[in-house]
Length: 461
Image (cartoon, rainbow, N blue to C red; front, side):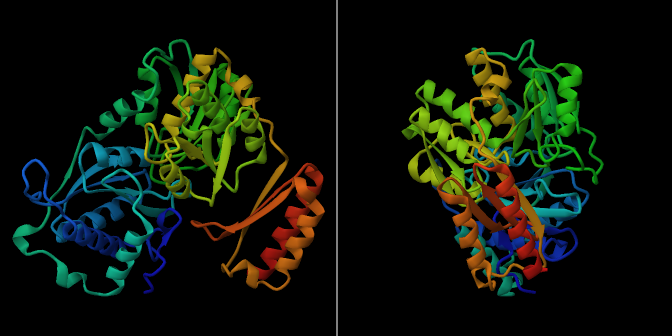
């Protein structure tokens, strides 16, 4: 097996029970990470002595395969002398928070985020609550590939224990509620909440209900197979219908691991990540809390975001796709807000990664502070026409190596002129190539996107 390159843009991901998402690989990952933690163990400052054993948290979403991966990871960690605490289903940002809060040495999330149930993945957080750096991912791959892990296991008397902890959900609920202004409540606010039959199905309703909202819950009946299945952030249509049906003030849709959010205004219109960034940025700037008067977005965000924020003296810094890259840029420059059009919204004042519930609370706080309904805040940003086509491919050849690609790209960019752009990239988690075209003429950009997508499909299928 080729273990190099297992880690993609968001951890290890693939179809469950097929390489690399097998119980054997999960055990090896646990062993490799466990060995690294043991090797890097430092004395506890209060006593000058090391912990008896390193400790990790493992959380998951609601996929059937989560049980298998959870047990295999735990076994790997235990064999390296690492204690394991299992949280059960918990949002990805919950593990990021608890890794810090419980002084764990690492936090592991078993999830394939927005993918269907048959996929799964492994994301690793450090003790600081942030995703581990690329260098550590490479070290894990190298250790597995070296076939030396069996020689590094601890003696039998030092094997670690695994136990389930019952209060992880409650800790996360309290943390999330504390990100909402103390001088505000959600009394009288009616919310439609779609939990995607995923990791947030218990904690998300509790967060908003305990702040006073009336919550109409969708997608809270997970069965191992229905995560993200026509529900949640990738399918906000049901929430749109429910907002109108129940005359709700707002709709909130999270994805399978609850690290992203797409909202719905009271008119039943979808509010994507770019619009959420706009309204939260403007509110933070008004409160003098937007460090550097700058936010971080990715190449996928609409140029309308830049235009609107520029009117208020706010700069948009762009990175490559992936919330990890957004967070890295934010940390480098001490920025507090960043995110993606897809709904990963990072509020570094509160969270170390995208958090759907915390982002929604920030929007609700902006509504409360302004006294405006979500539709008015949604209309603050005007989208430039944008077309995104996802094309399934069989291989991921470097785009510049495809005969005729560079010429097609130059011709298309010339056709768009100075007020348009084309952005093409491979998905880091699925066998897809994404073609994004943006410009003033909706009909023109649609034709350009179709042409480019058809060309790539013919070359890569």
